[in-house]
Each structure stands twice: as structure tokens, then as C-alpha cells.
Length: 168
Image (tube, rainbow, N blue to C red; front, side):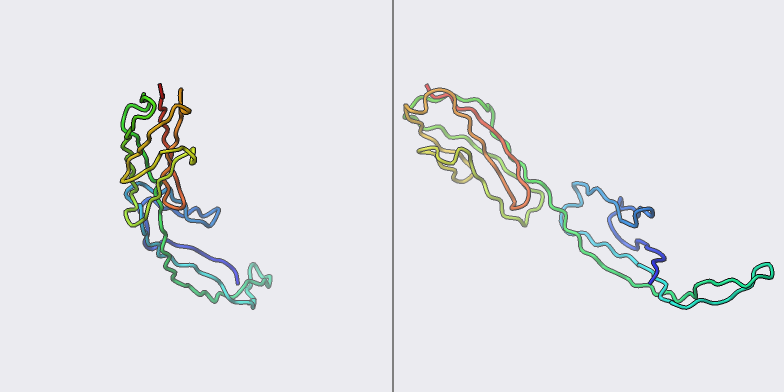
């Protein structure tokens, strides 16, 4: 089998065929998140025989042409990175034994995905995340600066945001 050609029939508008690499090259855009169809043909010469032809009085050989073209369909899923944002300010002050509530805004252009929302450090006492809000009642042992990272993930990609809580 000898490769002869590759041709895009249908696919994302900015997907191009790189003939040198024999590959489709594409950098998905925001509006292409989700499922995309690529339809293409691939052509092979399956002949394993040669035929004789005469060029300037000299017998020469050339491979016979028995071309087979196959149409392929490929579904490409484009996953967007989820985003996370902390309601300003990202530096907040609270007194020990008083609760602080910080709204957390998360989003993913792939609406069909389930997002997880976590925090680090994971062992922060009296801290929970519920309904996209961070609740914490710091104790005297938390006096000073406490940096808390929030992580949103779709199971593949993730985003983080940090807030500094000063306990006085």
C-alpha cells in the first residue's frame, strides 16, 4: 500500500491540512467547544505490480495505479478549561471565631460536564464549600495570614484562584 492523498471534506473552518506532515492542524476556538465532525478521504495505491512503458526508446517500469479512496468520519471533542473567580477582594480580614463567607464563581463552556470544587489546604478546620460559597470560622490558631487556594476541575482540566484571609 502506498499513500497517495488526504483531503478534508467537512470539518471546523480553521482546520487545515498540513501536507508535509500529513496531518490536520487546528487550534480550536471558544465557539468550537463540544463535539466537532471531521469528514475526510484517504487514498492509497494498492497495486503491487509494475507496468512497462517506453520513454525515448528505453523500456521503463512504473507502478500500476489501483487507487482506493476511503471516506472517514471522526468526532472530535473539544474540552474547554473551566474557570474560577473569587468575588473581590481577594484579601479579606476576619476576627477569630467569626464566620467569613466568600462567593466562588465557576464556569465551564462545556455545559454537559460536572465540575468539582475543592480547596487547599484540605485540612482547614471549620471550613466548608457549599453552594459555591466558602464558609470558614477561623480559630485563634489561625491568627495571621492564611492563603487558601480554590480549584475547579472538569475531571481533565482545572483552574485555580487564591484568597488571603487575615485572621486578627
